[in-house]
Image (cartoon, rainbow, N blue to C red):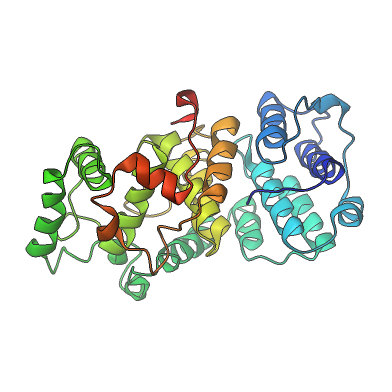
Length: 322
């Protein structure tokens, strides 16, 4: 989800983003649209000094001619999908235009159907799909429990507590203060979370990689922090990044769409510079902590800053942490 392409192709993507911003017929981009385009240019496309009003809108066939098909096309459509939601509204005209770009570029990813369903007010169907994709993207989470309920995979210890597992996580509090494992412990302790194994704890297969991503990236559990950490994961972990990570948190924290009975929701948490920075940081990270073969326990005694460096997690200015 990080594009290294010639400036002319990057400018074509920004022109397409401007066309999406204008699709509703307002005749001008909003302040949020403008910041989304400028920050995407600087952070994702390495284009400084972007003047939004000087960017000519680029239509689907022209974008196709300028960037072709393949990975660049897929990434461009993902950026356009985000652009369509920047103002915090699921707009049917913007969604239709994004799908026109996808058709022109030969991109047929499933999240495009989710965009259309939400824009057509088929929210229940769209949220069910996102929950399935999210659960399925965590390899050690038992997503088959979705047949019981939408929250069953995430609370396996309610009926089968595991005190030994909980005790193993609590023992992380005895590690030296600078270690990753101690940071993980403090993250749970400061937020009032229960560890895996506790009847009220979330499933180890979900919460351990998710909250490890919080600790490694530095993002909080506030609304914008959750939006950023899931964007970070989506860029780091290649399993349905848009449907499983990016769209769910934009809908949850920016459009106020409640995904299930354990997920909160609010409006207006999307901030473009934070979002694109999280996107870039996740793409640059070289070790996928959601992957099936990542060893959490082997990482716990390692100093946190040493682990961040080994995993290629880019440092970030404090004001861009959320």
